[in-house]
Image 1 (cartoon, helix red, strand yellow):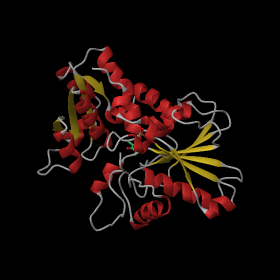
Image 2 (cartoon, rainbow, N blue to C red):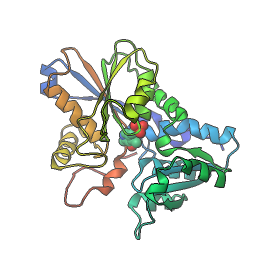
Image 3 (cartoon, rainbow, N blue to C red):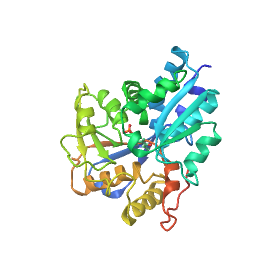
Image 4 (tube, rainbow, N blue to C red):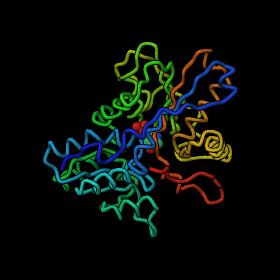
Length: 312
Ligand SMILES: *Cc1c(COP(=O)(O)O)cnc(C)c1O
């Protein structure tokens, strides 16, 4: 088994797409999107980058597969299931919450890809000893923490900055859950660049939380700002305004977004433009981190017009 990135995802699909808008042009702002969502329909965007060094570890540690953790709609769980299926190695997903009567499309698909699913109550899941317990039970598997939120995940995310020439951008924008991807990108900034991180999670304390601690611990030549005002009520919360932005973004730029991360980032970007945050001459790079499969959990009452998964 050789986890060659080439054969699993198509990195060359990750283009820089220029976005056009008269208002931005008039304000002297250039806007590009880095479409890492396009490298694979489900091993989507940042999930691939956060996994790539873990896959090397599977080989180096002579493990038989991957043990990982996540929720019922998790992009990470599905990405692991698909990667392991392609490589024909074992995968076990420990899922937060009691086993549901009917599986979410995400869980069904993960199971069909060969992942063994184990359900544990929420209270047990949040206990840190859960990793220890399962890694003992499955010691033939390599453990990847939820969201690949560790040093290997950050190192993989650094490589996002290598797929295109991004040196001339003044601002780079990301959406954050664990902040792993943003930490990797932050490390790679040059001294003229600022990272703007939109939190998809609501934190009671905006000055001391997992994101402020993680980003604060990174070495970088650049600067960053964490923005906590665009979570729409919290993780996976949304309203009609957000759905409208998603439809507009698709209609105007042919860019599908997911309601959990990338739509909130785009909303944050539009709001920053409207509040004149970006000076004349700014070059903004929006990182499209993928995650489109998660739109399957959207309420059917709210219509979004684009395809669920981009064409590979
Ligand atoms: C998982 C995910 C994120 C969050 O990544 P972190 O490294 O946990 O911050 C952002 N965008 C998309 C589309 C994701 O699927």
